[in-house]
Image 1 (tube, helix red, strand yellow):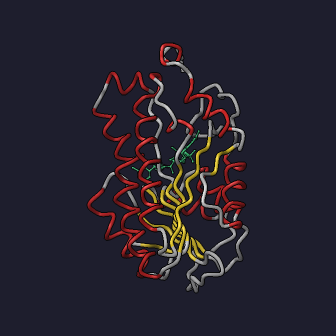
Image 2 (cartoon, protein in one colour):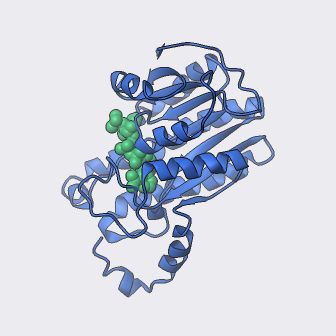
Length: 258
Ligand SMILES: NC(=O)c1ccc[n+]([C@@H]2O[C@H](COP(=O)([O-])OP(=O)(O)OC[C@H]3O[C@@H](n4cnc5c(N)ncnc54)[C@H](OP(=O)(O)O)[C@@H]3O)[C@@H](O)[C@H]2O)c1
């Protein structure tokens, strides 16, 4: 199930991530995070996604030992087995949960069944996969889970309400998981980027304080090195904006066009 371009056995020692699992292995943000980690070439990474051939191409740009595995965030019943197989290949120290889709609200209004795919990909699949990962990491008493929430989690906008709801749910899950794992040696790093210019937002005009995958990667890598517990806002000034957004009176809020 897992294929490797080069295969080594990582020690998974507490000194740093020796073996990384990137769920949504083609994610621009996920790949930018792992590239920014600056780990040694002995580091092993499993890129997990729907198109292993594309993952091999993405992995070729990484300075690590790359494995790929077929993973579909919507195949919930397979997630425990997938995680078991990954961990059977060696201890994992860092899990990055980066699968996600952004589907425009007009499309969802027209075809509500697609909203189930969005919620499944952005929320349910993270829950079923990360509960399995948390169990494995807890057994070793060591490891970090990075969860990519969003500024969209702060307050639902009518122009983006299902995506926002999926991120609010994911954000709440990550905070609950943080508490559930407290004292276990496993930490959760919650990341809340703003608008990130890239494939997911292609064709959209950038929102205020827009950032890039590379900037998110650097911010997350720095937070991991420092042992921060988050949330990591990217850019940092977004935390202030989020506080202000919570205070906007509802009659005004509902006038927002995007
Ligand atoms: N871009 C932004 O503005 C922004 C802002 C805040 C938070 N985020 C979040 O950050 C995360 C990464 O986003 P990104 O900007 O890196 O977007 P991206 O480059 O489009 O990456 C999303 C990844 O999710 C994968 N994916 C989608 N559906 C999947 C499924 N059913 N099973 C497995 N993988 C699936 C995609 O795989 P395929 O290649 O197979 O489609 C792709 O690799 C997402 O959770 C997103 O919501 C993004």
